[in-house]
Length: 509
Image (cartoon, rainbow, N blue to C red; front, side):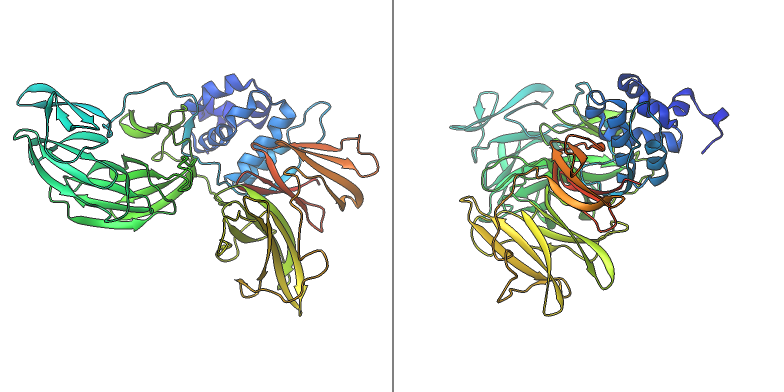
């Protein structure tokens, strides 16, 4: 980092932990875009993660949130410096040993960005174009099909249309729920028609340019993402997304290379998901996952770069990322935590709505192998809602609890040595069934604070620690950026907290 004398006033302020903790959040937010030095850019990224919470938080809660978010970006020295900021009449902050960062991404640069014009058009019900030097209007009519002004064009009746130039001539590309078609607007003729996914539905599409040639980027109900060369429609590449019903496809340029933000919907109810994948289009492969407001996402031009703006005002810049490290958590909310020992190593197990069981090194948070998929073989079952560890025949097992939409329960067992499901003929008393607990359960444990029995209770996004024999006396209160969904205590007196898809290990000492 440059010497303090070389820093700008904004960089000096943003690299001061006390300023970040105690200053008016409105003042800090005005400085974030001016961060230039690497450490200042990191601090700005940390502050933005929970920017929507800082305004209503007191300095003690803000200190805990900032220390947590710094740890989520692998900035442990900054996290410790933030936690060490002394505040009058406030107990010391807990140290964040490690934290995951599924819901924290350094590409988020603003949460209240103004409306900006899109840098490239997107498919819509109507679109303006120019044919033979004259302005014309394309309109999708559910009865008569695609119309150029009032003239119907031959072919399918599309839902959305996009004008484009192909081989120097004005064309229109449009699609319905199965097919896509290309019209030559000079001749008013149908040039090509495509069935991208056979019997599978075409749920989303866009146009992008690769190697100087326009391509159809298409997404299917089943989760296939594919690129087709235009005008012929020859398949260039295809791959499977993690999601299904791919409706959001937003092409943009990243470092001069074609990329796209891709998001799906819940295939059962059609609701859009608040998470997405970042894809490289050449070659076609996913390069990142993020939680993002997926409403009305548009590419916008800012300072010569393409950024993404969401309908909620979020602004994402994937090109100018600060130097941070991320430890990914779950893809959806964590519902259950457990601590055990495997091969002499303390580990934490976590399970949740993404139907996966994950094992981590308790000391570092590092994943131990690939997640175990817990998708139920039949029925409308949830992910993991309860989790315990047992030993049977000298081997360690995990017992996971699941419910369905009718509140039926199911218990499954997993051999933690082979990492496979391994049904046991007999379970210890109380492990063969379970009752789903409240989403904010109080947890009682010993050896949390110097061997003193303590009660840990989560309400909303706050966790309170009380002496077990004096529940009205608060020893500490911890703040989190999302609702707390699970708690667990380690044998050494540390606290594991799950909040949304992420989890953190905190140390009171």
